[in-house]
Length: 225
Image (cartoon, rainbow, N blue to C red; front, top):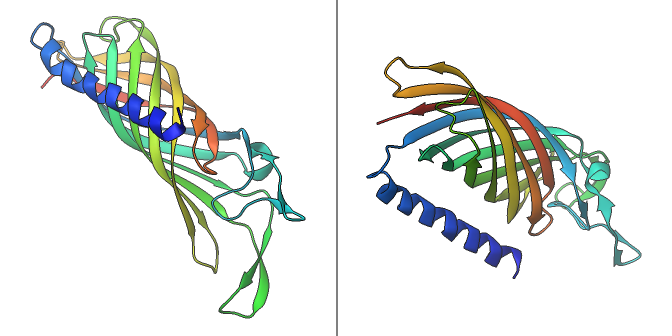
């Protein structure tokens, strides 16, 4: 099973979870959730190229570690989801990760007639689809750890000072983990807020997409319609 087939399978499973949530809601009310988060993004894995260029020497590809290609960066995102029966949190959202290349590369400008050194900046834009299991109900527990999976289709952009940007469409599968710390609850129990540890680890990806260990935090607002 390749990365695209695996990603499609996980995406279908998560979307089926959204559909099942409508039936479950007739038995137990659910909370909706919005979150905003940010944090640190560390490149991991090894690669034979980037969205900008392949790594070649004497006509042969070679591999380099992500930590030798990219500087550590930062990420941020926003998510909308649904907490089902206090334990299953299904969500969709947008995520942005940015970091610089560690090395300068040399590019020949076709329109300029000279060779110019460049240090590209890499941006990753993703549409996130996640399914997490909350080991404790965050509505009632002061601390609620969670573990889950995520599918991240998106685009990697390598940008320069002078030359046109290079783009690559790709997908990644990852693991989500962290915990929710409840800091506020409405008197009628129809809403609550958590200060959350929001982390993920990219396991596999397509193309030359950089994989990351993302460590961060944010606020989650849970509410009943």
